[in-house]
Length: 208
Image (cartoon, rainbow, N blue to C red):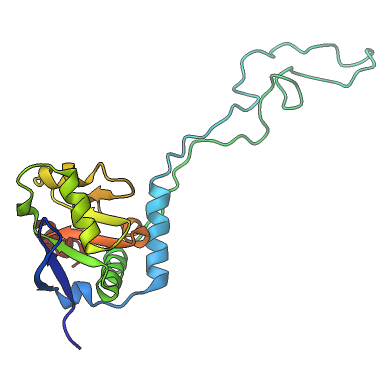
């Protein structure tokens, strides 16, 4: 089996040559159940879990019994803060909670390798020569993507490549991220992936 390759694009979107990718990372087996488990964990980790409501014990007031137990003809009541009262507490209220799901490190890396390999096999993975952006230029980035011909890309850059970041971040439906913040969910939802040469090494290290 031939080693996976990806086109190396310059700032004009022209393919200078094909870059040979590491087989251990970009020719791995895609395991759907592992990807599903990892994406679910990432989405759960993004949940704030701050939803809450007050129970009858947390609502202020209601200390005195509203009327005596017998003789009024009305139903007995011990507090005006019971759930059936207007202004009362909530029965079984939601409380702040942590939705985090633990996923082993090997599982996360396996999912990352599988999704990257799928993009490489589908021809939706490209490598960008970031040195071509001597200054920020959104127009250059738009023309590059049009020349490449793939829609809804995920652009992965290093923190030092600010010219590339500023060139792509204002384009509609383009997501820019760094290798440290790269998630499997973003790769799954992206129609294509564009990685700079400097970021490619960090991505390989993260998936290895």
